[in-house]
Length: 283
Image (cartoon, rainbow, N blue to C red):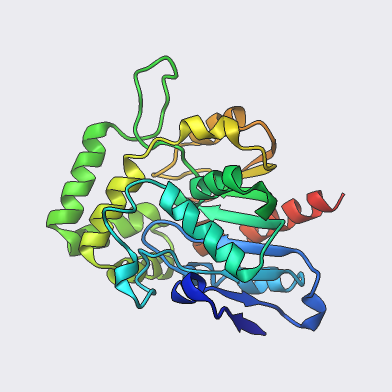
């Protein structure tokens, strides 16, 4: 049973709740939030695995997503940080009447979830930070933070997207997604192709130039960190950094896989990890 939302922003962002049956009423609610360059269809493989456990599944698309019909929602001058996205998340959850849910945020959505939880802790029972990074650029400060990229790498990335968008999609697909899984690589590429190139450039600047390290110590919601063991976008060290920086981390889990998208290439392993989170909270 799929229930589309009928209010304002949640409608525009294709928000919906999926329940296997009426018996799912009162069951655990899991909100799956996609990241950079994709849309809610990125979760298609894992949804049946979670519905089989009788969970309620909530999905929506971010304003930048190619699946959103009203392109005017994404304002380049507005979304220069993650805070406006966090405001959108809170609005969608309020419109849907959601509270005390398990939030699974992939990639950039993980940090957005952290920010939203600081503003409205009543909305979140637990944060699952999936392939998350608070900062992608290495630093030479006292932190000696390893984000995985030099500043020049990010500048080159943005320039390539801007000047060679279609070629970049073809090349970036098998870097972000396990190249041995061609169907999943194609899925990621198809999501990127739905987006306007100017939106991708703007979003890439916001994401890859972001630094959200300072907000981590303010997160009071219990967290589970799930990372890929071999992710070109997020090195293993970032998972350990998050584990130390966030107060209430119950587990740091590394999924044995290649790439940044466990929901595409390791859905069964990811589903088991999420089910473990739910069972942990039941005790």
